[in-house]
Image (cartoon, rainbow, N blue to C red; front, top):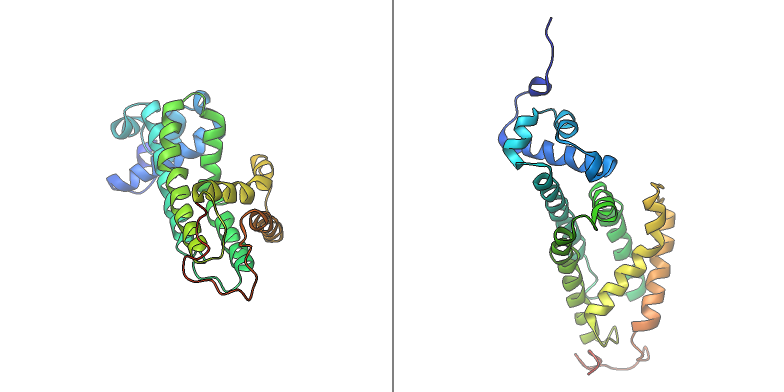
Length: 230
């Protein structure tokens, strides 16, 4: 009788493929069981590798958990910067273009699988691993905030926005876009496109009430004429 073990439950895979399988399995198990409830046996079984393979790659559960957070953060950042590349630097209709941008952010960065994983890991394990998530804050959202702030600063320089501090404006924009979706996503509710559109529209309207340029539509503004307030 041929008994299948974890080492032969999948076709032969290379080092990189095994590493990715372990990270994906780790993300699922840590999110489902929590750090305390997860163990290497669960993760190795879900990854289709031997427990020794997991130890060979990551050493112990704590190092594997850190690697999972780092990898999921890297992928979230990559998607965030893909969306940031579509930011409306030269808007035809600022409100409409920012709403479309906000919808892309929620669809591709907040509601995707990695975004869900990362949110659960932070909510469930943030207090247990304060140093890890302090680094995550700098390497994850910190980079996205800075990049978004630079784009809002350019809009202000062009006269489209009236800002004191682009960094604060960027964080507040993301908070407005995300806040109405946090509780539904926490409980696993599926968010339809119509709801994402409504949330984005409300967020952008609120943002522009605070930061929209006060110039009249027919006023001529030279480049930088309504830039950041001193």
